[in-house]
Amino acid sequence: MPLRGIGLAPFFFTLVTHIIACSLLPLRWREALIPILPFTLLSIVGILLVDPVGYKIGNAIMVASVAAGIALPGMMICLLRSMRFRRSSLEAAVRSRYVELREDLDVARRIHDRLLPAPIGEGPLVIDFAYEPMREIGGDLLFLHRSSKGAAHVALLDVTGHGIAAALLVNRLHGELQRIMGRGDDPSPETALSLLNEYLLLTSAGDSMYATALLVRIDPHHASMRFASAAHPDLLVRSADGTVRRHASTACMLGALPADCFEAGAEDAPFAVGESLLLFTDGLSESRSASGAMLDIAVSYTHLA
Image 1 (cartoon, rainbow, N blue to C red):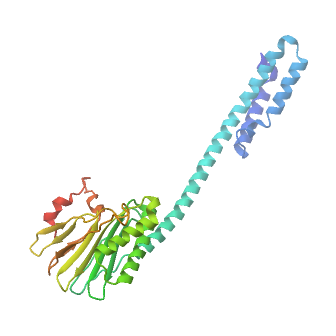
Image 2 (image 1 turned 180 degrees about the horizontal axis):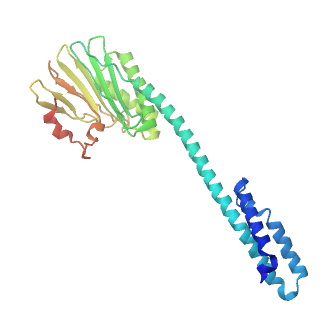
Image 3 (image 1 turned 135 degrees about the vertical axis):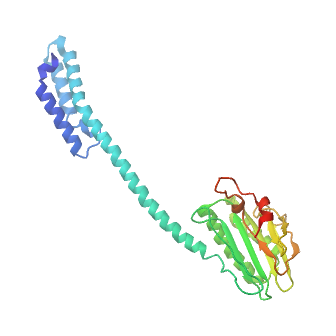
């Protein structure tokens, strides 16, 4: 037998030695052939030169088969070790990157939260809010400005999309609102809405970023309000007797039309003592109950407390 000619002991000794070496040394699966391939090639060349003609091919195939039987287990071990190493390295890199992203998002969330105004708990007009983004940071913005005439300007914006891109645009719109209110002190809602639309066109038109917005000017001394809405969810007013009035949007979404085609529109409405004004983004209507059903704002009109 050919294998008996080689000898079982040398075969298994070489096999075990090669397996141990591949298990301990940091070899790639190709490198596992290095100690075997040269001797195999030399043996085959020697067989072709020395052996009788009738045995050359058979003996060469036999030597190649024995070498493959010795090399294959070690190559598989090296391949499995390499795959496990790559997987562990990738997991470690992902964990490290995840920690970095979490830290960056925590800082971004703190910066974003500082944009929110302080609630007003005293005086003729009380303002409070709740904010809970879908992710660490979101695309909603609440802005509050008190004019020198005593009027309160409330702006609620919702940028399309979620996450970092939307939050970056929110920061830019917040700065633009500060500029508008700081320059005019008491601008009309339609003027501020038109300026926001123009700003969004100039800065984000190429990024296909849009926003809905609702701007309300509340005059507590005259029990009235004026508002302009750009495709934002309806404004709700709850009267002292519990009835609810709704006011629809007055303009299209910000960033969708050029300035010469954009008509902000505006409406005046009474806002008497004891009435409540409710502003919200579509995050409220898109929320789901504990059973998984999407909330219906139309049903909740008769249940506002």
